Length: 273
Image (cartoon, rainbow, N blue to C red; front, side, top):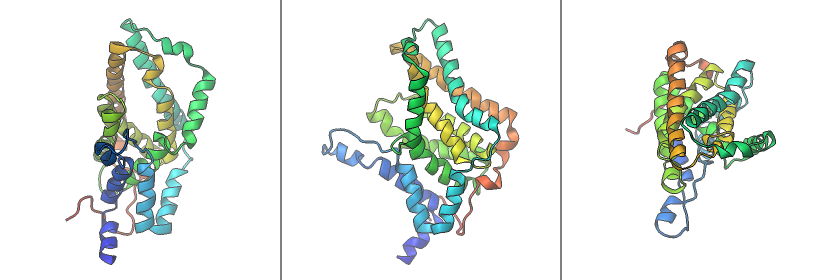
C-alpha cells in the first residue's frame, strides 16, 4: 500500500489523466458489450479526478492551493471582458463570413438575450456541463503541474492533445464533428493564455468556457454544407487568435507566473519508469 501511494505521489499527472478518462469513458465498455443502449459521456471526469488525486496525494494543503486557483478573482476588468466576449467575437466573425458566402442563418431569429442569459446561468452550476466538469481539472489541476517543469507553449500543446483525445467519444457517439477535435486542441492555447495572464485564475477560464458554450456557431442554424463550412471557418478563426497571442504576447508564452504553477512536495513524473 505504501509503495502504491509513493508511486501515486510521484505520478500525479499520469494518475489524474487516467482517472479523468476512466470516469468520463466509464460506460464505453458496457456500451461496446451491448449492455447499455448508448454511450454516456461524463464531463465531470476531470473534476472528479482532481478531487481524488489531491485527496490521496496532497490532502488539505493541496485542496487549499487548488481552491485558491478556483476562486482567484483579482484580475483587471479587461480580462473579464476577454473571457466573456472573445468567444462571442470568434463566433460572430465565423457567422458573418459564412453568411457572406450566401448561407442562411435562421437561428438568429430565435435568439433572445433572456434565452442566452438563462443558458449561461444554468451552465454555471451544472457539474455535468463541460465548464464545471473540465476547468477545475484541466486548468485548475493539470495545467499548473505541467507548467511546473515546462514552458507554457509546450504545456498547452500537451494539455491540448490530451484534452482533445478525452473528447473523442463525443465524435464517435454524440455527433460532434471531426473538426471539433483540432478546434479543441487549438482553443486550449487560448485557455492557457488567459490562465497565465490572470495569474492562474480558473474562474476566468471557467467564464471563457461558459461563454464559449452559450453562444456557438450552431446558434446561427446553418444547414448541411453551410454548417460544415462554418465549422472550418471557426477553426481557422481560433488558430488565428492563438497565433495573435503567440506573436503579440510572446513573454507570456516563455514562462508561466509562479501563481500559475504547482510543484508540490513530491518530485513529479509524467510517465512511470
